[in-house]
Length: 334
Image (cartoon, rainbow, N blue to C red; front, side, top):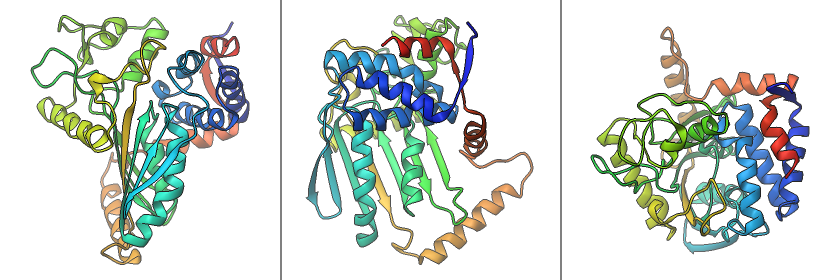
């Protein structure tokens, strides 16, 4: 068997959806999940891509994730939307939030949406990109099961806790900034573990607090934050916004996204959405955006964050998605 295969986007989505439906996931939820995982794979975010399918399916079969969950919406205050994900996958709740929040932001200038009883929410940049497609500026925070110790600590309390920012542009190539507070995404370590590969020293520590190049030891130990103490402080900030504000579990209370052991993780996501005309005019906002982007690109060897995705998507639409043959076989036997 070849190590890699090229599969058309629609076919890959169908393969994943079928595996999830067989694992007690509703048709509509399976579609949301499959589309999100395939898009992550296309964009090179493989730690959030199809490598997640087997663990997702196992969790759905055993009830750690409620594959039949229907998001429940509450308007708790003017300008605020709260969504109970029902211990299901995050993607249906995110879809619901993105369908409701722009209208609130447009009418009031700014709006906030929180999701609780949630799960792994994939590529944060994809979510703020969808907000940008609706003409909205947005900031997204989410917490994940514990992976990072407080600075100089030895026990993981914070998640890798993604933060993403999106802003619309007139040409449709929206500005997207997406990062986790760990030096690398935890999904990259999971991917290395699945492929029996080592990881670079400096990504993580084992449970004794020693540097390790073994992904299994890293998954059982702690990730290192980017920027040292500053990254640790940012992780704490995101933890409070996504869990304390929404009422979700803190990272150290949440069971893993990676296996079917334990309880539903009940993590949270928080999105702040801003209308471009909240203070400035919409036209003025776009003029200033264009000025900044031109200033950045006028310098040599500089590129805009997130801009690599356009070429990757173009290639995938023409030729298909390059995927691990081993992972596809695992998905097909679910």
